[in-house]
Image (tube, rainbow, N blue to C red; front, side):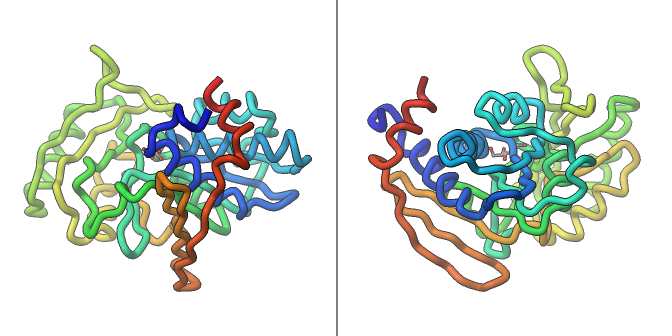
Length: 262
Ligand SMILES: O=C(CO)[C@H](O)[C@H](O)COP(=O)(O)O
């Protein structure tokens, strides 16, 4: 079955497979959203079913909640968990300080709340997500439906006043209608090209009335696990200041691939 996976899917899979090594029996685990995080949920599901791992999962979207239940993970709410041992999630970009842009899948609000409520956030990614400076990926911001156009205009004015390189703001669509998040909000995508001072930028954007949260994750991520299509994984831990290399054996994981491609 491995032959059916593209190199990028293999990279996502090996990152996920290595990252679930952070999860131990009895842990409360934040479950991210997106195609990379879905591999992690499947890997955890296999550990629950095959190895008897006992965990409680807090999903960051209805999509992830559905998948987690489907693969056998017990799902609880964040308020039930109160605090999490680890959250594993994908990203749209990460830089050398492990600051992130997230929200490409529209789940940034729950993702940020869950990651912030965790002792540790582990990001899983393929190397295409690595950037020198954040901002090539459009920065998603979640805005409430009330006064949407007014909020968008305020965001545009703010970008002009901050003198950022790009100031094109688009409303994310789902076909002919605005995309709606799990919280019933909308997403504005900010096409900025480059965010020179992401910490400052995040603070300023969140000051605008109508903006609920933005997709910049500053000082939240502790480690990134980077997967490659040949099975190599690299683990960069920002706190320990270490980079470890590892390898995931595809043959050993053939059952999981069969599950995943069914
Ligand atoms: O932030 C996210 C969802 O809101 C995702 O983690 C991000 O978009 C990466 O997704 P993928 O793993 O599919 O590339």
